[in-house]
Length: 248
Image (cartoon, rainbow, N blue to C red):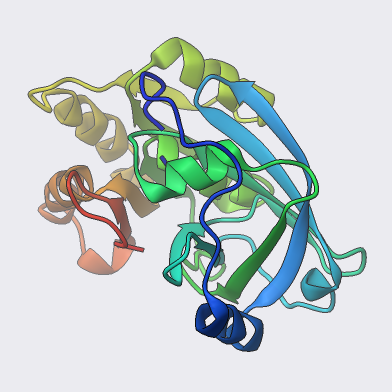
C-alpha cells in the first residue's frame, strides 16, 4: 500500500535524511537493503526491487508485511511484499501512488542504488489455515497482497473497487491477476452494494472472506457479509482512511 497526486510535483530527490539520533535508532531497530530497480508499470504504480544481506535468512510467508522507514522522523509506511528470496536476499514491493502523503513522495522519489531500512516482516493477514475457497476484496492498495497470495487459495476470487478501471486492469494483468473483478468507485459509495452482491454469491460455497483497503469500505462490506454468516468467516484489515495515516 502507498499513495501520489500526479497533479502535484514531488519534492526533489533525495528526501530529507534522519538526524544523528534517528540514524542510530534505525541501525539498531531495522534491517538494511538497497533499491536494485524501480519500474513504473502505470502512472500510479511502481514495482520496487530491493536487495541486501538484511533480506537473507528471513522467514517470510505470503501476506506478511514490512514497514519501510521513510523521512527524517522515524516514520514508516507498510507494504505487503509481492515475493521474497531469502537465499539471494531479494524482495519486491508494489507501491500505489495516491495523494500527496509521505509514503507517496518516498515511493515516487526512489532511485536505483538508494539505501533503505525496514522493520519486519510481521504477520498481517493469515489465510494459510483456510479450509475452503478464499475471496479477497479491496482496492488499489490491496494489489500487492493479491499478488503475494496468487499462488494460494486467496487467488481464487478477487474483487476490487478502483478509481481508474482501465489503469487498474492493465496493472492487474501485468501482475498475473487479470481474472480479478474490477468495480469503479463512486463518490456516493453506491458501488459497494455491487461488491457486496458479488461477494455474497460465494457464501453458499463456504468461502472465507478477506476484506482490505479503505476503512469505510471494509466496514460497509463486512457488515453486509456478517449479517448472513458467522463473523469467523470474515477477516478484515483497513489500510487507509481519508485524512488519516498509519492505519497499518
